[in-house]
Image 1 (cartoon, one colour):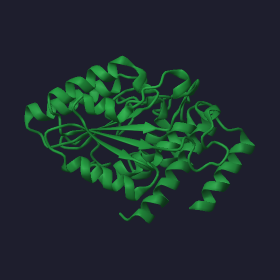
Image 2 (cartoon, helix red, strand yellow):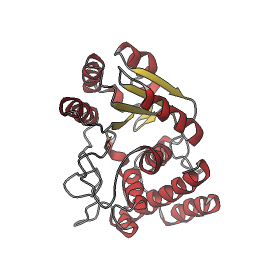
Image 3 (cartoon, rainbow, N blue to C red):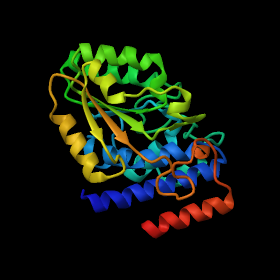
Length: 273
């Protein structure tokens, strides 16, 4: 799929994010919109997955360690055909399979239940280790937030992955510079992120624009070609990308748009479609 086609899909994913969070009247639109391009690339270009067989043994795995960005994952899965797009409007509703954080027991295409920040990477490392142990060829991808990596468990898992040369593991740090309480510098900066992962024996790829498909494509190609070490892609993204009043606005970390804001957001995204 070409970059222009991917942009159209990512726009559709963003519309699904805004639609679901508005329908739920709660959720996390900012980080979801910022990560939409990376998740779109994973599900429509990079990973070997099959919507008709979500539990296929040889599929590539994806762990959304920053589980509160579930709206992005759900929208990508719906656009990819894992379940009907209409389900997005049931986000966080009683009886819906789309909970506020991913649940592998209920939602087709979800490989790991996440939500407690810092823990998803440990599951991803376990998946990568299992593939090495059993001689399986699948790859494991894990998306972390730059606020999330303030958690100590992230670095325990990274230490293990580096020491065991899990070159079938690709981490992506969604580096938008904002978290729930403010900027990462104000809260508890993990900078320099790239140097830290290098110290843990990772091959590190720094992406200047994690919302640009040409740069995303090059980074994942390099990650796939890397042998003998796990990869960490540190991607600079814009929180709230695609919706003008949400972009780089920490206030949109975890609140839903009202009806007027929803209409404005959807109009902006429709214009870019």
